[in-house]
Length: 292
Length: 297
View 1: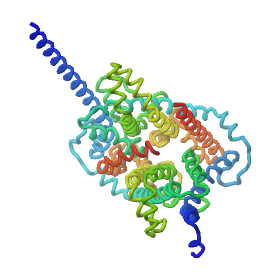
View 2: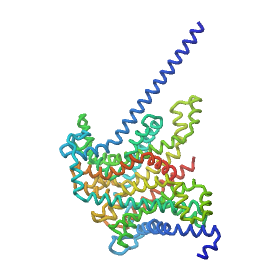
View 3: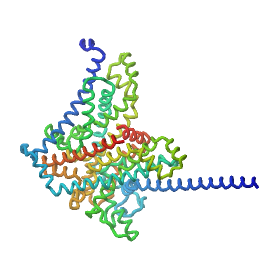
View 4: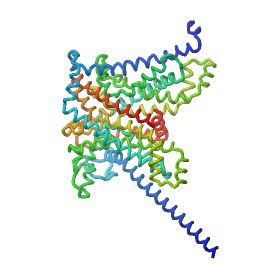
């Protein structure tokens, strides 16, 4: 009697436990399903954009995602227009140069502010940090005046100069140079390296993940930048991709397949970059978000 | 060179530091501080780009605060903030909270949510604009029509246009917030949850008593970061309302678009500068509130 009792209770306990486990795994499955569905919904605008860019006009108003008669005619049309190629190379050039400048200067300033003791260090740090508070929109008018005085309107330099250094990048790099032990730098100094060499050959390689994060942010920011390029450029040849896309789309009016093709051309490069460097990018976002 | 060799190590450091900082200091003075001062100065002047800059005292501000368009625009800007920040944060938190508990295809799903962050606001504004078109063009209204639901005049109505423009902005920023929230959730020590389980605390109480209080720094950061973003909204509005910028009837016009119009369509530089000073002040207040909240913890 006693024996069967314990047997029964243990049996019911184990069945209880397994039913609880089943419930939990059911809950997990529902959770997965909802999150997955939400994730698919998140990329639907991108999917629709890509799908429509491969459609003939007559098919644009169908909601099917896979075109019945796929075509690359929209792409040949947009590329034959010629302007897109120019806008694309403008954006690529500007974003690349700005990224290089930021990686060099922000890390140099961050390094100096982190590793040197000199009078005025704190004031300079606070001064640079305070520029984080100044919104771009407040500066566009003075930048425009400056550009028109010096003849920088409608030039690459005019588009680039406001973003060559950023307080955000400087602060981010300073945070990361804190993790570089001073002994390493001291050892290099004893080995007879000069200060620039120490920065470049000893300190920089140790903060490579932070440099990658900074590079991604700056590149993305400049690739998608809109308001300043819109203001500083006049001629279509100098437009960046976002500004060009606006002009192109206004012209195209109701030819949505062409607009979607233009949008796809300006989006695909960053999507590819993301798919290739996904892990680094997400890690970089977390680092920049939490430390910056 | 001889002088340099005679310096002590700490003196050499000072020389190096100022030497390396020379170019950046010039940059920050010329491209950040001088323009800021110039914008503030210009806000007390009248100038149409061609003539001379005339001192007008507070005229621009008086004009601005008695301009009904400004108050409409100011209201819109706050509407973007008040609708955008809570809804995007709540969504992002719910997604992050559940995604954090998921192992299967965790990375893929995370990537799906993050992908929109990598897109260009201008390109996506046009995609969404297409979605919002009336039947038979737009995806949303086509879908509504399939189910026999009445059409929504998304971008053509003074009530729907602002939320319609806000949607792609929330959509694009959501992935970033999810990632930051997940990092915040990971940083909470597991022992708190174990203790809660032993004490038999309910899941809801665990959430409100442990998770959310410990996430406070993350929440504050995201509130400020996204608030500043919504207060500065421009790309989406400009591209989704090109035939009537900020329309219909100024119902979607944010402060930055008003600044752009005043400065580069009306060439009323002083008046535009006064508007930028207002924007700057608003952003400053939001950031200072953050510091206040952070210190209270």
